[in-house]
Length: 509
Image (cartoon, rainbow, N blue to C red; front, side, top):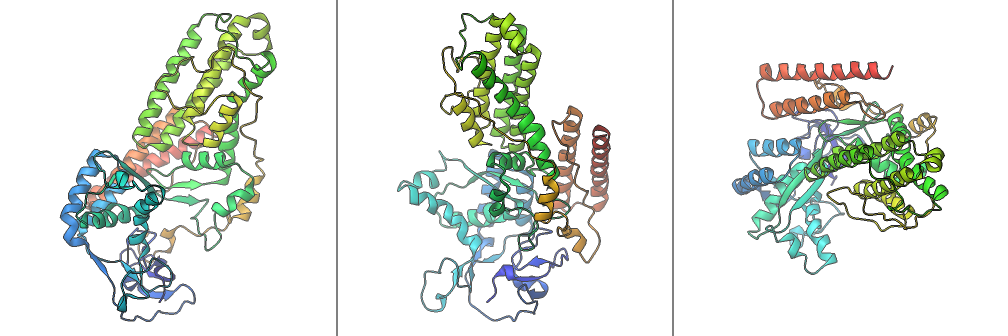
């Protein structure tokens, strides 16, 4: 028997030619291999032969009232991404159906029954989510305190949108069907697709960079984490671009964060013999110091709110704003040899304030770039710290001795763009799925341009409008709203993206 992924054909719902036997990558529909039009074997291109075989099914229809009631409560009380809600609602709207949970394959978790069930395994997406509680059970015998304790435990899950139904419908239904009290999903953070250069990632075709390739580039994990999280497709598809990858390393990580941390620590190493100056000798705080503390605390509040709302990309953007405030503070106060020689008391105050801000940054950045946070703490000769709700100059104290400065990031040569694009298929990526549909072209708007470096406020504001309008269009489409209503909203989205493209061109001239 062929595994679902080895059966390809035309999707019966959207006519995409390369749908797989388990789902269509274009419209996101979950399929059975027998649903495909003109099915073919991926290995040799021949038409597969159908054979009768006995299987187990989940009767999801019987569980729909309970599952739907749970979803309404969870998606209201928790924080669910718009696409996670829309996909789940569409399943309920169509009505839950029988779902096959076994396969005739050699690899997988065996069905634990004898006779006709021998040689059969559970379907991966029925079996895999059970791994969440079973993995917990390998760490502690008290696993039920986590997985059977909905009053005290909140379950957060993160995934691409194509995995939503397995976690928002099938697995919850399986747990509800046991009649036991399980910890069910509370918050679901899902993404759209990350596209590669001019097309899409394809491991089978060698297009795009994958986990096994990352190490050979020599680029540290923090840079990868930063780029992918700052480019996380939370509301719209986003593009992986080597040019943007290099620019974000050089213009954001190196020029902003790396510059701020390295400049301060090297200065303290050189001028103070690595000793934090005394507050008694420092000048009284000025408006510049108080302004910095106010602005950092404003950003800190926004950062905490973003992570509470599972807005991962926004949290990282705010974190980098805090670093930028630190750089601006150094520029405003002109920290250099002259300040140290002629106004040492003022220099002491600036150094103490900047060191404490760097220590705060180590906590703010930890969820995103833990190795960078650890490096900052190591240079400060301080333990990795927890995040405080308020920034104050009270963590790195006078008399403390810091360690020698280390570079957090290195510049990436722009020439690497062509090298990496050639090596990882950036010039020959597979066309976007829309190009391979047999029927009418998709009216999906083109992806918005990617702005390199720190974004101006006008770009941020326009991107927010695009995100909101995009969510509105998706909701209308998911609800199968009349085309006469959808089209004007779609046109508005297209106009906003054109406006952003025009603004992008203007700002990058």
